[in-house]
Image (cartoon, rainbow, N blue to C red; front, side):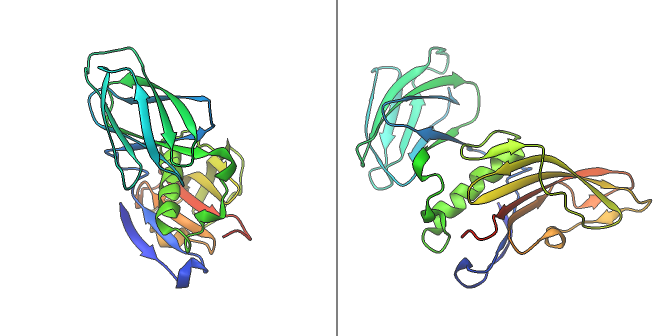
Length: 245
């Protein structure tokens, strides 16, 4: 969910995107995997709902797999695959092979779990830092990639194309707010932080996402907007790396 959007001409100047997806459970969870031709990807999908598989910068054209284990439909225009196990009680993984419009072949081992619908995003490793992620060229792909990173941060998960650590810039916002880096995601174009914020004062603090924005920040979300004395909350930030985009 987008709460606030501040944009400037063609995104050439920084934008701040306030996003709720960090702290609000999503109907479809997105997980990204590297697409490597002739290799197998192991993923988890829902055993009772329709799951979505998509390939960034490409379209799925053919699907092969054992009959009687799943139902599927390919979106001819968007090139997405929608797949659902036929028997919710089945425990054996589903093995499928997809062929894309660009001629890539990807094997997938889909492990079944009693979870909500999953979206599996396959991305070619050599294009993970492609200039096509520039918002002025392809805003939909740009936003989807941004959401994937934000959601991974919210779930404390690893993200393909990003190095996760507990080291990173320690921002100082206020004498009464102590910040601690909980996680830092470093990619080729963007970097993300998960901060713990501590109210060291004896008074409650009213917090707004806009108060934490800096020139290169793209996405900001607060877990709580009111922080009690000696209380703690979480702050999520995604920024573009200086000189990029």
